[in-house]
Length: 399
Image (cartoon, rainbow, N blue to C red; front, side, top):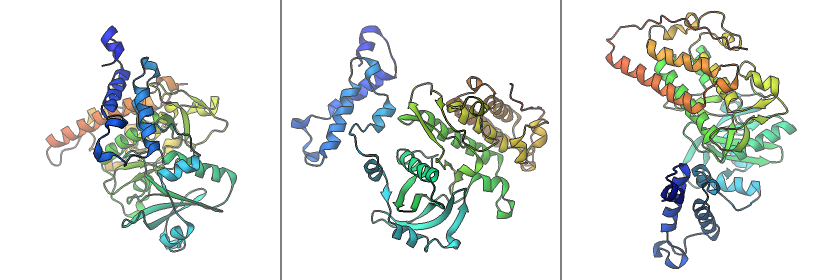
């Protein structure tokens, strides 16, 4: 039990950190070590373990680590490239060429501004072959190389069900390649706009679940890693969907690492405005500052895009109530109470003043609430019944 709780009845998350430190102490010291693990602990790992224990048991709560830091602490100062290679696999050019049949056009599944995307098949650590998504930098230019390195360094630290998993990379002369998990159902953009791909329109419940998943992923980036991470380019083409339609945030080339995670992430000054026109928060242009609330604004545009029929209406302001622009596939399918919560969140995310926007944690909770209301109403609804939306929602952020 932490000192401040015993003596002053003060309780905070740092009390749990102290208790966790005591649990670590219960793992015996060298002379009393469990015979079953003697000789199996690397010295560097052992030093890290006791460094963490010592930090957790600091007398002053403010000097203790957060649990997020505990989870990811590595106090040993190593070269960045060494750390990266410990956290993910480095592939040879030959392995990549073999997996894509020498970058065969038939293996190409996408194209971005500076990258070509391929589907490949690779063997990892002697295991069975796995399908992978391979992103190859098309042209050698300084900015592209910097973005490549930044994305690899960032993704190798992240693990979350709603963030695309980095498998490895290839960095050899002019070849800059990133290897990700293969995500079978393409991007959210494909499902919303590519009618020629013969995809079934997303149901309202599927769209809600996707929004909840993206919110969880963003909440993790903002608060779950050692340092706050700002994605800076939230849009449908950067959200991939797996076999179960679980969304995965991808494309971290423009992402920024902010300050060490706190309960309130701090804005970061940027030299250049980055992102996609139509999704960029107004303060990015005016003050060249970026914060978690800038990602929230982009997410608000995504929420709007999930229910409207035409992409151009997302970039411009809707001049008519949102209800008049709803995707025909959704008409009669949305529970009014669910819609109210959804649109309230959309409006709050798109507030002109960043301080008036919710955090992604708040957004996540409210969208889960909206989803539960929809599911509950659907369970009670008779087959063939339709819902009617009587509200009129105008999206027009205040200036």
